[in-house]
Image (cartoon, rainbow, N blue to C red; front, side, top):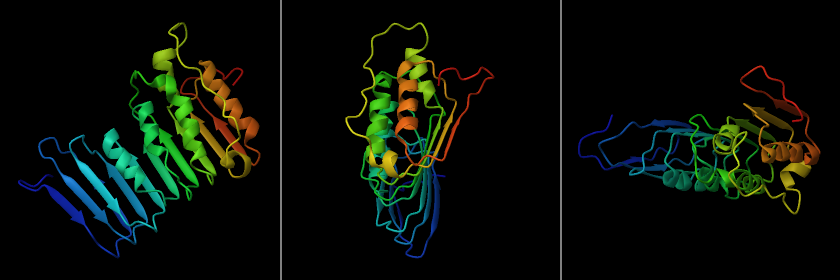
Length: 226
């Protein structure tokens, strides 16, 4: 719970290896400073637009889970996690993917979740931003997508003739697809929008070391034509 009059919380514990920080603050503007050089596991949830979070010195970080975090705060957080190996991030809008276009040189597994589907003006850029994220993760071995199709379907579903920017196939195949990606899990795959199908086909066609690919839907309709 927020403490009256408190504007900054500093977490500086050199030996701390696991940190969970869940905020539900609607009344106070809080600033968090995290300086934990031995940190290996990080879970952050619930940062509002007026809050701030500065993460410093986490070279040992293995796993991070970021959920329900405002976009501006998310950018600062993700920019501080470039040494992370496993990352799970909730994507509330396509613009949140911009926060993931950092050089994640050590990232081997990522989960992107969209648990709060919204119609968003930038849905048309979703897959192009997604590709830039793949390009920034050259060592990615495990890719898991949950509910990301909903972002696109809500705005460009069947029968919707609104013009939108088509997905552009990259001019070269990314390093993670050529030499690293082994596992692809795509939950709530819809396949009703052409761009989504093309992206799925592109990954399957170019992921030369892929060992497992799993596609699933929430209903019982078969996946036709992928």
